[in-house]
Image 1 (cartoon, rainbow, N blue to C red):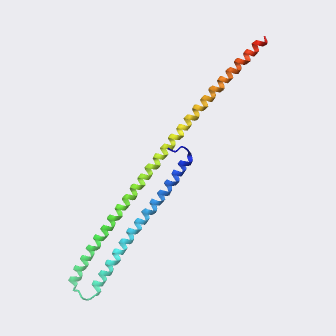
Image 2: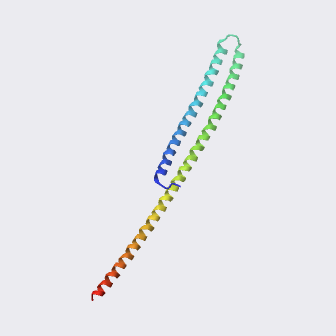
Length: 150
């Protein structure tokens, strides 16, 4: 897993970098959608203006053509929105997956830290036992030496 804190810090840095990339991708996707909607409107506005200003159509024909244009405009906008929503859903999924991976890494790091704490406690306990045993040996040796002097 994450055997040292540098790996964990690197993982967090990568996470933040990827999250930033996703945010940028999300913004670019929204910008592309808004640009596409604007281009659709500009195109149909020009077409509508031409139909109204050309002078070759009757009022009834103009109304009928403009209705057809509005329907085409609506369909194109729906398609653009559908494409945008699919891409947005993909980005949202990537964000959720990235957050899940970060949480997993965080739990892994907590496990590593608990494991290290346990090892440290065991080492401290072992050192305490060794020191206590050494002190007992020294006391016994001192008692032995003292008994020789008697």
